[in-house]
Image (cartoon, rainbow, N blue to C red; front, top):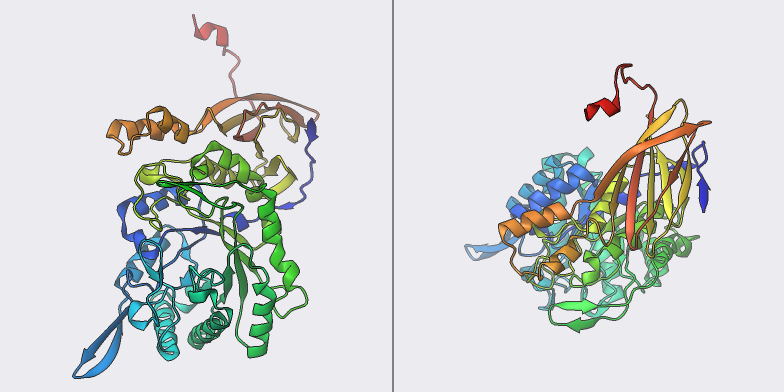
Length: 491
């Protein structure tokens, strides 16, 4: 199949694909491995926002009740909050705030989720909950300035449609939580962005009812959020999970659902944020570590910006403890990076996207072709089964072109396979870690293309589960001196 890439662009690539990325619970950002991992991700990918659970949970320590002279009081402590957000901003990434879970002293029950026990019950006192929200958001405004914080979306809770995350999955109680929380946020400043309901897949019927509720109650809402995964029922083994996946196009269908369901409601036209997406919703599914995973998600990352305002990969690294402390370096974690900044194949999918141009020239189910302002053309191609695409690339004002190709596949940049060949050591020795970091890099080749009639032919062969990026730069002037002789270089 030969693809003749048009000379004129068909639109802008946009930044929905890197507008947000997920993270483990809030206070994990105080750890060295986390900080070094985020620094690497920001250097090579550059996400705009970061979202995770547990901002209001006891591990962050904001809500600190005490008694003095027989009178109960609350002190709001932001020691960890300031350290984490200062670190984010230094790396060029802003919070996408999720308000949850419930501080134990404010909770109405003792139901929790995750190994780190996030409390999922409503507050004992709605007045005290609203005070906590006002204190937290007010502190952020005081510290970072209102213009800064107005750019940080504020999401109310996480997946309230699931009893694991909201006691009894009580929709009426969530609506009340949303109203109280959103109004408390707006009391700080009307320009702050607040939204929800952050539902999990399979609960889209919540969206029209949420729209009806906020309209009836005049509750403020600036965006709509939901999550998307494609995995089926979990089959558990010790320290792991296996699941069948739906086709990746199912993610695109899930992304498109909110706008259709909300058409004609009070929420029509609001920004839609997919604040979590991945293949499996389990942090112990080895599919996340594979070369297959990068090729599987490539068509989603390349195309979903046409459907939503952001879609947040869950998560940027494996410093993540919902199921407890991981027992092996590769354990099926959500992260683009394994522990110690070892790059997984899906990391490279995002790093490839970060090197693409802004102008879309061509896109289909197997490739994306862009161009930047300097005339550099980038071709991102992927396959699950192997393929041999051929491209005719427009390159004006050039007699030839220089290309660099970077690839990950079952054979190249597949550190998960290399770790298996090592015998899957549970604790990596320094030399093993060094070796795996080297093997985690994509294979790179380079060459020259002839340009005839303003076009260059690019023929590719892709292995099974391969994602490849080809960067093609026009050679507008060859400055090789007349006395240069390649044959004489070798004597």
